[in-house]
View 1 (tube, rainbow, N blue to C red):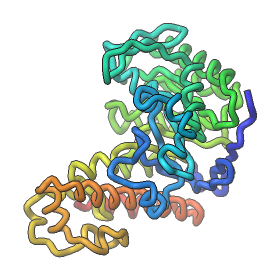
View 2: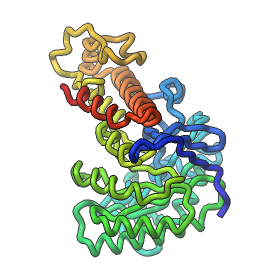
View 3: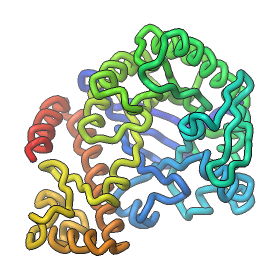
View 4: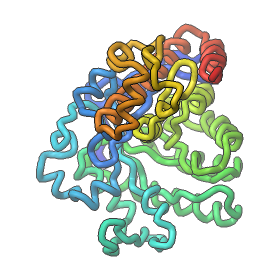
Length: 370
């Protein structure tokens, strides 16, 4: 296994909340950080130039989808994912495990790997931990994720125990399979059982992974379970490695995660909600299709200075959405991504100034007002 070029430095800690710097081959990413999801080598409705203007330096792309179409070998021939999508910043790729296991009846899990059927044409394929690493290396991502098994919550404890063992074995195989100097993160599983989360974390820490993720949450288990497991698991992970809470994106959940000691997040929420007309503002969520905005000349959020809020009214945004105009998805997505980026900036600043809990309390009071 080649040494990685990924470096992480924790600059400040306020309670359990952390502020740091993640360095990926000279690209410095301030943490805590939210990663927009670019499933098919694109963050839906947004150009890479706009992502940079908003301030993003790290995005997530999906191994499963890119492996099936256009194919990771094809992307490799075209110079890798960065060149393919004209993105000169950093990319994290998931292993594809979550997408495969979400296929439910179309999968068969063995110790060697998992059989699955393509959602595109029904073709049967077999993915091993080694194959997941090879695909991600073909893509040329900066941070790769190990192949893991993601279970629904609740699940029987013995089923979860067996799954933790399988996930650990697969993580070790991914660790040995890495050939390039890319970052590789392990994924802690264990459903809602604290003792199994502890066992998973302890076994994974035995290997010198570049970072550690908490997986298997935000799968319908409820907010209290998510908060409890995140708060329990995060302190078990190494202080000098980045911590990543996978698939969590509600603004209040992000702040809960930061308070627990999480450094990295990803979710489709800001862009998916945008396409459905749900917009985030400093005083809460707005459903732009509502008739109350029909004659509203005000900006979407008076406390936001993004291009959308500086140039367009709520009435106009409602009109675009009602007419199903493509511009509606573009403007809404731009604003939501701006909101998320600024939320991370404000949270980081609060950690650096030893006032994160005060910031969180003030944000919640404002955001939950509507």
